[in-house]
Image 1 (cartoon, rainbow, N blue to C red):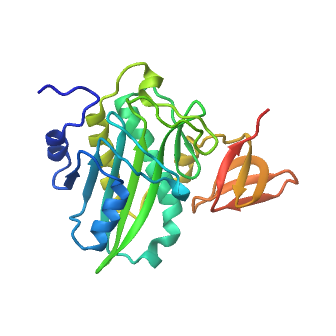
Image 2 (cartoon, rainbow, N blue to C red):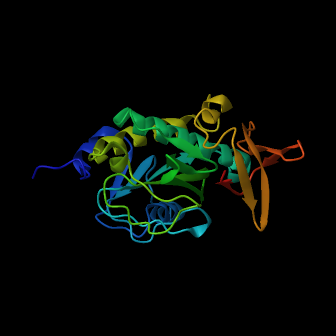
Image 3 (cartoon, one colour):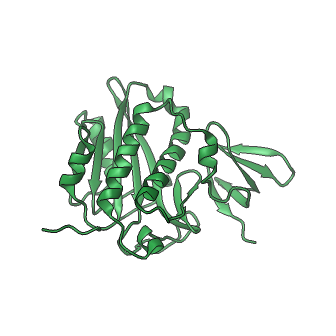
Length: 266
């Protein structure tokens, strides 16, 4: 059987990421949920890629739903660290941004003309439309911690998110380039890059400036939403821990480690 760009070539992916393990499912409720549960049970062989063309109960940040059908990308990369969760907890917000940078680079390796931005703290954006998201979860291990990096990207299938995600309407990579995108190549590129990133974690030589150059709405007026509070100001960039830096209307500089961004309409 000949595979198309929208298909996942399990054999090719397994060979390309070896010696990492591939857990491939025709259908799965959530790649992250599987990874976390298998890690907790001590049966997950890491580094591992958990992959499915059909995710039925995916989860995003703040328990938002992220469902996907064939042609889109839903995957989790799991990696065992010798560090305790306490030792790496402060590094996780910055890790989400670094994963976003890796995702942008991997997509552009496949489709160089796509202009992507990273919307703090964990979204991928094309022309002010959401194309993907990142969810990092952890599981304890006998000798450290297992990181589970979940990524969902609208690649080829029709966009099924009928409502705005974090204030942005959805889009897809194929819509951006007006043709199908090779899903297998994207999975391989992204998996290899993530495994290498996690192999070096928490010591990662990636300057904040590299993240700021693709930061969505940098230099523009935004609102940082934290719970029931809305803090307006100019998005200046990021600090060394991955917090967003805002210049408030009174001129003071404020840093936020949690929350979400909204652009202020002109």
